[in-house]
Image (cartoon, rainbow, N blue to C red; front, side, top):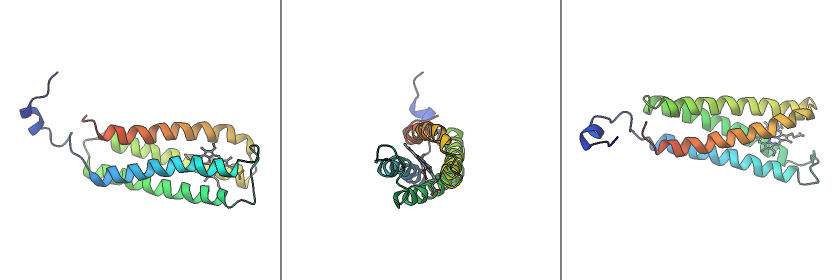
Length: 142
Ligand code: HEM
């Protein structure tokens, strides 16, 4: 169906953009991508964890930053783009998944639950997918 100029002029809410949300969700996506880089560095010794490596701590702090950015993006979308449930809902799910991912990571490191790595890595990929989908989705109107 073709959207006429008249349709668009009355559709300001659904087609609204928020530069703040775009910046926050873009930085969240970057933080998630970097998590893979930090993990690659501390796993580079034939897949063995280099426990002396501070890169695991960088990975942990990166997770904190990612959670804060995703939470801030959720609030920004809820306040500025209330009609875009796909964006604030998606950002809220991303925040929750990042919290779950960090909790699992903490169990692997602090409680030696190494078998949870088989959950941690695929969940990271699912998170990456959502973290890419959200910025792409901002360019669509509902
Ligand atoms: C979505 C992004 C990710 C988040 C938010 C995340 C978060 C975390 C956190 C918080 C920890 C615990 C660190 C600590 O307690 O000091 C951890 C551990 C770990 N992460 Fe991730 N992670 C992510 C992606 C990945 C990826 C892509 C990989 C590997 C391909 C990975 C592999 C690991 C491993 C192996 C550990 C355990 C390290 C150890 O043995 O002590 N993570 N992660």
